[in-house]
Length: 115
Image (cartoon, rainbow, N blue to C red):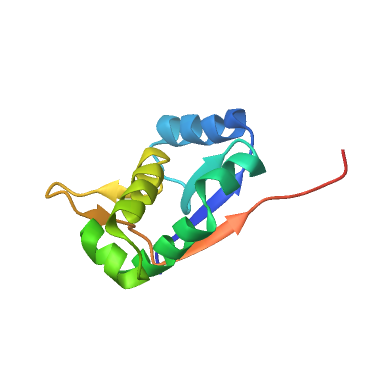
């Protein structure tokens, strides 16, 4: 199963992983999309956008209209959410303009601790 981990960590940590992969030529064990703060994670992954990801997990490439149909929402509203997820790097657009979430599972990982 192809899984992506959405995590919260400092940009320096995410960049260190990138540099390590670049130097060694070896990819990370699993795909990661990192956010600098929990607030940024929740700003990007609203309830409605999380619903879109659930509908797109393992679905393959689909049109925005099809995504809207699957979640029972207005196409214009879904388009706005899809654009936000594309801009954040969570979704990708295929060559023929369809939307793709290339994962079958999502893991969210962050730590809340005392200041």
